[in-house]
Image 1 (spheres, helix red, strand yellow):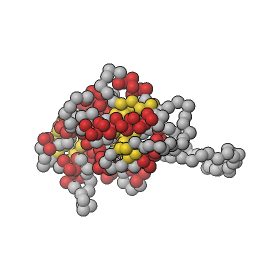
Image 2 (cartoon, rainbow, N blue to C red; image 1 turned 45 degrees about the vertical axis):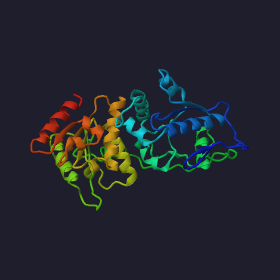
Image 3 (tube, rainbow, N blue to C red; image 1 turned 180 degrees about the vertical axis):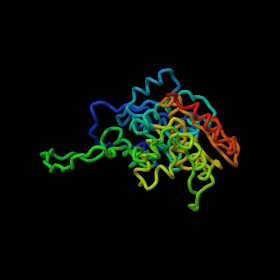
Image 4 (cartoon, rainbow, N blue to C red; image 1 turned 60 degrees about the horizontal axis):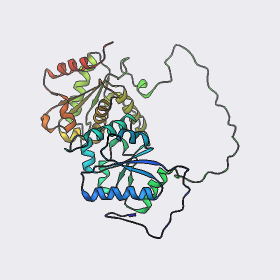
Length: 346
């Protein structure tokens, strides 16, 4: 079949010449069978095309052997639609939740960096439903050319042919000054360079929307600074981006965010509206922590919400299950008490 924006059609009288590996790639296709009859048919025809082209494609079907299929597969193709995305996030009723949770937890256990889980969309409007940690690389199958890109990836035929191996070049050694002792250690991680008052920000991560659409500081940022000041005064190590990430470039900023999310035991999501809590960076931060808890990476981790001017019913669905604090005079002490209980005892 060829791919266009509406339908899939079989190719007749055409043969793709390729250098296939000795064994066919093993592919498992995960999709939402309850999305629509048309969508299910498209997935089935997609699987048929892969098998015709020499790829051992198996389809997501309810069976007690599904965990074995996931382990068997070299690649898991996630057919992303709105229904598929919402069901993974427990925002869509229906069957199959346990299996979807299993795939979701396995995907996040790999920290989103593994190439095994490959998002695929049939329509450009479904790109927004690619899981956040996999959104940097997905395949839109709206043309035969794009299908062949996916096919090259699955069969290991990406790139160009290799030239003959040349001799190793001998490079000059870099001369270094001998160390002096008693000064600061120069070899630090990004977070190590950002120590505040001798405390590494590893206990609590504060997630909030810093600037509004006009570039002005938000009310969320004011509240977050109050929370930061109160918790640090109590002796906790707190990751607060305006202080912790001052003067960092874009690459170091992202690295420091991920290091802090990995090390923090507690995340506090601060918001004055659902839109702010769902903004790109804020959602990435609390969603990453929540997913680590669900997948068992942080079985004792906690996510708390700290809000003003909104109700718990207005929170994103995943955050409605968390302990919520309303910004009042006594709320900071209550939040601190809950954080202390959540942190491991030394």
